[in-house]
Amino acid sequence: MKVSLIDVDGRGFPNLALMRLSAWHKLWGDDVEWYSPLFSRPERLYMSKVFTFTPDYSDLAANAPNPVCGGTGYDSSVKLPDDVERTLPDYSLYPEFTSALGFLTRGCVRECSWCIVPRKEGKLHVVDDIERLCAGRKNVVLLDNNFLAAPAAFVTEQLEKAKRLKLRLDFNQALDARLVNEQNARELAETRWIKFIRFSCDTAAMLPHVKNAVRLLRSAGFRGEFFVYVLAQELEDAHERICHLAKLDKYVTPFCQPFRDFSGKSEPPLELRRLARWCNRQEIRKSAPFEEYNSSIRK
Image 1 (tube, rainbow, N blue to C red):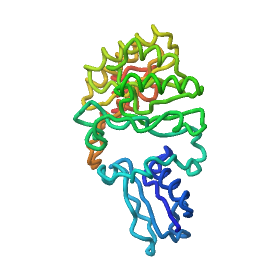
Image 2: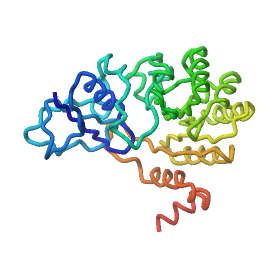
Image 3: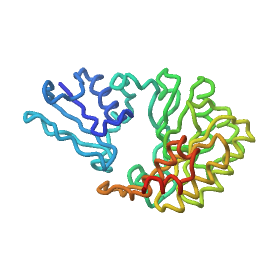
């Protein structure tokens, strides 16, 4: 069977669902390719979209089969079959991406009002093992939404395996600062990281937790960098969190993410987009306060 794939977002970051589908089809002897309206003649066509605000793909040829659509950008209830979900990804689809990619856990123990993970993935549960998931690669990007909420024995086991295998990790969706304690801080401090330990600071109430997590990790001997996501829904509140984080430690990098309604139909307010540009371009943030930058843009 000839199978074609469309990564609708096309933002450079690998689409894990398409990678798993490709690997699964190849195991069954099917031919898999990226879709081309001019040259592809697939018998099955998959389209995957992560973000609701991404415009839909509109370049299908007249003779293309009806696509099988999936991903949060289409329907968060659509899931891969279990045997596909357990298939290791086909990394040949994204040759420039040299890390392993996947989940050790799914779901989350939190129920944040802005987050779809609890209703999409349910309560937190273990789904994989780092030794299988790494597939012989030395860098591993993990998409877990709350790894530290897993049983402590599992957290210890996975970090010990990563240490033994000399893996470098990146919990791309961030760790929960509220769950950092003296034990896992020592384990995290002994872990090799691709670049950052990531946290999120989505509300002002998270500031003391991030501060405490940084303190515990520094006390445990971690000398690397921190990357902190800042969800921005209200200008003054988000700006204050960014400033607090920037002063917390010289190796803390705040990253502002203006809130988007899940429908994806509207852009975040202009002021929040300006705040994000000021924050995320470190050369701007470190050279001028936001008020000065914002005033200069308005002129």
